[in-house]
Image (cartoon, rainbow, N blue to C red):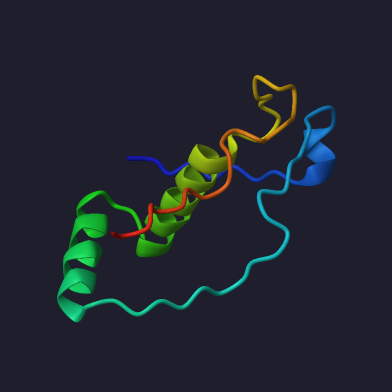
Length: 93
């Protein structure tokens, strides 16, 4: 089976818009139960994804659920203002 290697640089991509996915990254450290971590890593491997990819997807989904997708307008006409602020629990009686 032949192997084909394609090389491309920015000069060859004239006319195509090049978008940087993320210019910078930041580290997020969380503490979880070791058993849950092992199960999570196994499930990620079954989907051929890294745990970081899955966590980034979960965070992106959470942000979009709370604020809407970038550029999406809410009924009031404000961009990215999908939902109101956090809900407060009713006081216990």
